[in-house]
Length: 87
Ligand SMILES: [Zn+2]
Image 1 (cartoon, helix red, strand yellow):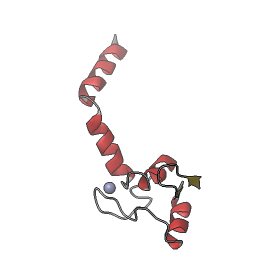
Image 2: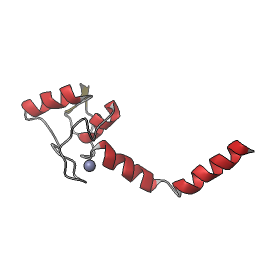
Image 3: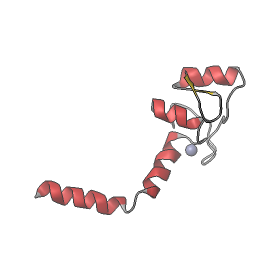
Image 4: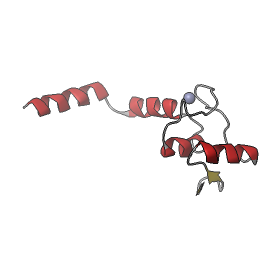
């Protein structure tokens, strides 16, 4: 378990931590504020993802989607990389 600086709360690092927080009624968010699904291993896959559930309130799927949208033209970047690689 990791201490949060942001909310002065503990942050889960995995499903076990998350369920412990849930039992202690210490969750900041118990479902994704974007898609509305509860957090499970289906939509949270990494330690960072579990931390993020209690920081942003988003599941990892939605968080990744949001990060992709913030990238300027990810398709172009990928195309450039591909061209460079071929050269
Ligand atoms: Zn979500």
